[in-house]
Length: 413
Image (cartoon, rainbow, N blue to C red; front, side, top):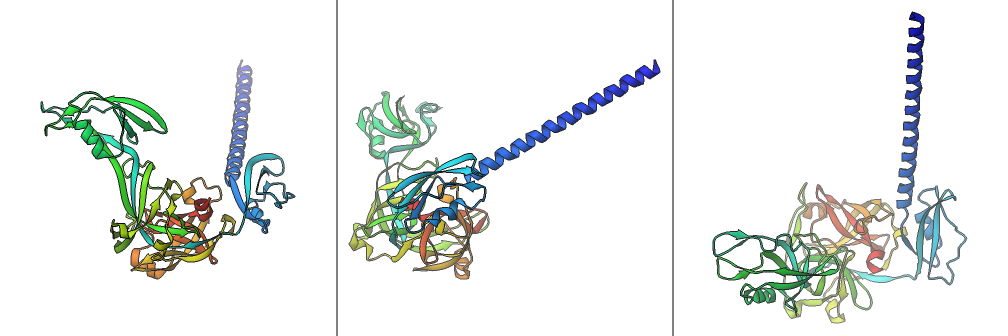
């Protein structure tokens, strides 16, 4: 019996060891599969969705796609006579990774600026930034808009009337006599009808219990102007400060701005430019026609361009950008000039268009003046090897000497 017991116990131990080895083998296989999937996704995401190359520089494609030797593609294609075509990138000639749109472009020149500008924008409709209490005549706080409206909704119509500004909306609410109002709002591109009933507040005026905004203004930096007066600025869109939503533009104007002071950036505080914008017609530079994730765009007439700092410069494509020394063109103490920076990293996948590369300010004068990059410098041209290759878009909150930039071809494209 003792021998039988020991034999059975030994078999049980062997069985457990065998199961443990199987478990380790499965775990190893899962790790290998996980690493493989992660590597595949990382390599795929390192490939841009689209590439622009010059007809005479067919190696421009290789400079981007051959960052990783595992990425292969058909390099026998000729760009002659083609404006746009698609190539398929593979992993070691076998596994498909991504199809890349290749566009053939001509050499492009623009005038780099770096001039501070004042911005004024009116939204398309009236934007709801939140809802709140209405203290009624009975002394009780109500929320008539709660669970009905959402922050980021745009009021397009009220009782069938187009809404163009918040004063018009306030007037209609006051004239409602507390009767239910039918609103048409734009919510994420979808038009939705809503019903809200105004309440008579303590001040004897009717309220819907919503906070709204119909315009915004601020200071930024002009990036470039082309030969036709078309400009690009900021390198990122103008969003609502409360909701973070990109503002839908009804109309906008560009003005001259004067920088009066700068609050230096520090850890946890990015700093900002402080200035004045004179909204007189004589100080208007041009129009704001587009507000997009890649910047604001519009036109500046020839007579208004005379007051701007403009330097003709060839446009550099993304494959022209390298890590290392570069410059930003921005305005300090009333003078627009170049300051030294380093491009520290390039993100070819451009998961975030506004963060295509990272920079660090190295110029002692700019570090002394502003601590690095501050709010208001967005749009400052980034120059490398005599070409405009991008624009400053963001500053690191924890380190004002560092920031991000957008490729200039994305602003132009």
